[in-house]
Image (cartoon, rainbow, N blue to C red):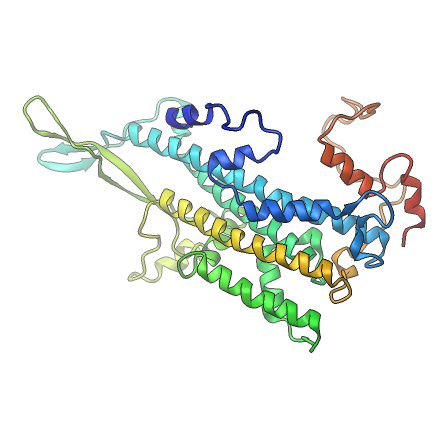
Amino acid sequence: MRASDIARLTQPLPGGADRSGRAPAAALGVEIPAWDTLEERIFADLTAEPPYGVGWWAPHPGTSRRILISDHLYACTASVSTNLIEAGIHLLELAEAIEREDDFNADAIQIVRGTPTVRLRPRTTPLEALGPEIVRMHEAGVARALSGALDCSAGSIIGVMALPKNILRADFMGVVLYLRNRKNWQQTEGDDYQLGFLADLNAMIENAGPAGWFDWLLNFRNMLVHRGRRIEIGQFLPREPVLLDGRGRPVLRARIVTHLPLQPERSDIDIHREPNLPPVLTEDSRRTLEGVMSSVRILLAALGDRLTAAWDWRKANPAVLKQPQQQWPDVTPPAAGQPQGFAGYAPGSYQYEPAQLTSHPRIGHRLLSAALYDHQRGEWANFD
């Protein structure tokens, strides 16, 4: 991180030692109070005794599924903040990495026989050679973390809105497309409520940023994770302020502006077939990523309010929308003694034989509401 960011983040917390876990998000400027409220609502409704899980869902969708879905819903909701914190850290590291590359390439433009010429400074150490890769790593990190926040919010939508989709495999675009493409809407109070939510969700996405921001972010993330990387395009621009030499002449100093792909869902050759279409966005990468960070926060703030209202409405009207079994299709654990798949590269190096566990009190409550304490575990054999 830049020295200025480190200095700011090493200041004492205004309210003293943090016991809420909210301080990192606030320090990075990525806090979303509405989402914290939703997380608290869901946690408060996890019951540490029968019927377990979210108590007011009972008897649906069966005790085993209620426990599994309830806890994963809470985990999804809490993980939205985790992903935003990671995105905030990547943004800070990206700013420092860009400034370091700017300094390294400050003298890249030189006057040769009266003509400005690019002469890149050779990279003589592995760390110098890694400079551009570090920039790319943090660009990818921002996009990955923001997409993760959206996908975790998709799990929250599935759970709160009682959608018949697998909550363990939730992704935001999948939820949006399911709601937009669903044909079998019925004239019931529950379907009317979900249709109203769809209209609100469409408006939230549209109002959170410029046209196309949402699709661009998800396509950029998919390119980074699943596709061949696009050709990187950047340019050298004059660095400000302009410095003067001893004779009063301007000293050429450059900075690098890197552009992210305009249509990241397309390949290099495909987009370069259109000579009149710029293959990249006409702004620097940091500005783009700061923009999508802002758009995701605006969307999630509105979504957090809407899902909190939906949670309260469902709790007051528990019979209208029943929690679907499709949210957790298979509740049967692997049979005892069957191979469990990957076991590591040095299995048994450190045995897992805990006699005592120390954890956050919330984890203890989650285990109680899932009937996983020693005095409860036997109940699972009788759960539907």
